Length: 384
Image 1 (tube, helix red, strand yellow):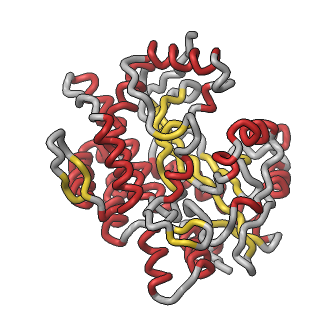
Image 2 (tube, one colour; image 1 turned 45 degrees about the horizontal axis):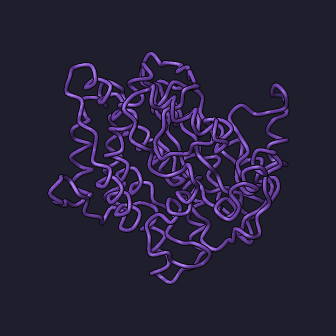
């Protein structure tokens, strides 16, 4: 089958952030997405807000940016939509947060969104889909050709652990400490078309693979392939899907800068003949596990001899290497904020500190609500 790739002229940027709807008093999940989306859609074509979407469960709303040029533009776009959603939620005694799992909610009690697509998914995937009470962040970065999208997506696998550990915000699963920095990634990869992508040599192999899956009845459309990193033909992007929901807009912007700079750097290296070789599949798989388990405390494998180095050092070196690209893309400050995440600790560490100090799941939720609100204007910074 022929799949058209809507090439981007440069490293455009889009962000998708999944928000969790919680009650201001109980701090538990609330199934109110359809009600909120109806209100937010008023005045928009077909009654649908262009920046706010359904997700699998009614306790979740996804906010998305338009096609942006800079990280700053994308952050402002998210900020505006987040303000709308939070205002609508607060009028109902609700509010929002963005972490990879709710620390004490259970998946069995959740209401599925009315979209028939989600009900078909649950019917086919059964338990693996019913457990998907998880929340993530996706980054889209534009690339100039289909062939580049395959090459860049493959090369980006070497950096998959970096994004996973920096965004890790799901240490708790149904009231228990999972022992992982990201339990979300392990839940999600149980789906048959999720997890690490297969190694593809070129765009033709991607087309062949999609045709095989569709002809075999494994999927209906290529939208049902949920790899950690994938080309997105309709958008003309490479999509990074490994990140947990990111608690603050500042952190989301930092990882957006890292994504945009990495894709631009790899695009340049594709042109000048210095493109890196594909990372070893076993190394990527093991490093992904190490990132999910240990977060920024992980020691990652860096060569075929099994040499390991501290992830914090590797992230610092990567940021330094990308500084010239960040200057070109006007996101030096945002890229530098990646080092702030390393220094302060990602959300999974902040959540555990709350518990270690005597707090509980409700205290984690209160903190996550406040963190997300910190990205809004002063007038909107209200936490329950």
